[in-house]
Length: 355
Ligand code: SF4
Image 1 (tube, rainbow, N blue to C red):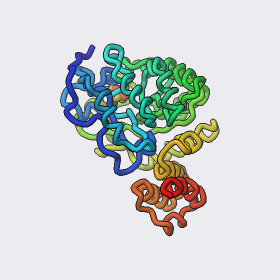
Image 2: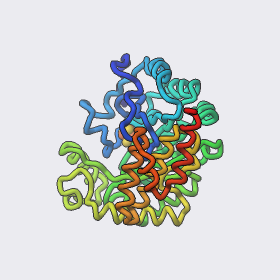
Image 3: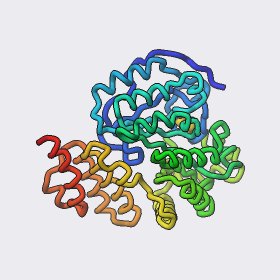
Image 4: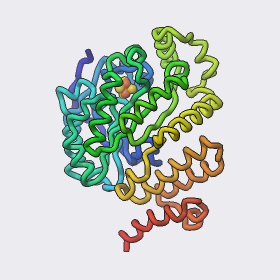
């Protein structure tokens, strides 16, 4: 069990606006509730940036909800805040401190869009607050799910709630009308990336009624983390570290050929299941700042373009998305996009509001 250190925040709670919008989480701001994570999953990037073991000490910023309220005074109501930063908001500390619940209440009072990323079905206990947020703006819950195999999950993340509990929570939230996504994060080469396993996971996600899925690959930012991953591989017991040496070759991400091949296989399977591979436009249309909505639509389209080999179109779409998000896109640049008519209709809302 972790020990908790109660403290007052020494910096802002929500932080600075992101220079580019986060296409996975739709967020213009990123924040964490707790600092440290008792779930302590061995593949978590948090191990690489925490000075102490990630799951040993959890810092509890007791004044966070109050700070969030003050900072929300300054935020545009069309900017979504992602509670997604390297610390699960429903880890065991939440049972004692309820900082996530108090923070969500602040979002509900101000009508600020929010996306919350967790591995815990405990998020369902805050359903009434999420419904309040979603009634006035946008509330999305995303569950991280690597596999539905309970034995593998036990080896990979023994302190996190079982996959079946997460799938049950997806169905509950969906029945209540809250949009739900799944983050297949990370894809671990040789561990949860086989066609058989990915198909089983995606089928279960679709059956639970999730609105969309995203994925990305295991990041190994430094040698310390590489050592931790090697230990994890030996504990799982099937794959020697040499496999990862060949695939990573000292880099932070696996080989591009591998990623392209897996991206194509995942996209094909999701299309067969009618499971969107990014948040569908209808889910956030009219609920975010028009520039954010247009930028996300472009980035999500660009993802599909890049996986299907339309590389130049994908690059063009991403560049235009960043220009729109920062308010720097010209009409000439907009007209060059195949999505011009849709983008123009979305951005017209800004012009109408300014008139
Ligand atoms: S639950 Fe998320 S934040 Fe916590 S250790 Fe696991 S991956 Fe990291």
